[in-house]
Length: 118
Image (cartoon, rainbow, N blue to C red; front, side, top):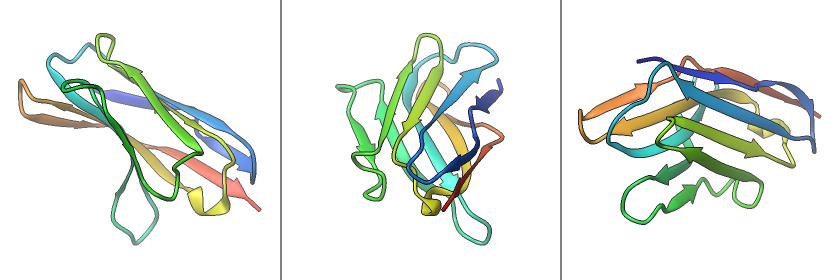
């Protein structure tokens, strides 16, 4: 199974982008879906995560709260990240993540670059 992200690009500060992630085929027993980001020389960090089981809770990194919104459809194994009011510090490679409790597998996409100019 492959996860493929799209929607990245170059945007001016204050602008918006919507990232999409789709699986090559549906993944069963999804526990959570999320987005992470990474800049050169730094560890990958959580941006947003949504739980498919247990109430559908979501969490966001403090730095993106109120600006980013995660959504998705577990049945179709698609996940989205709406990013508004983008800042230069949001510049990073963004990675889609899906965790299946059925197989215990953590799936990752190849990443999509987001660059925010000041």
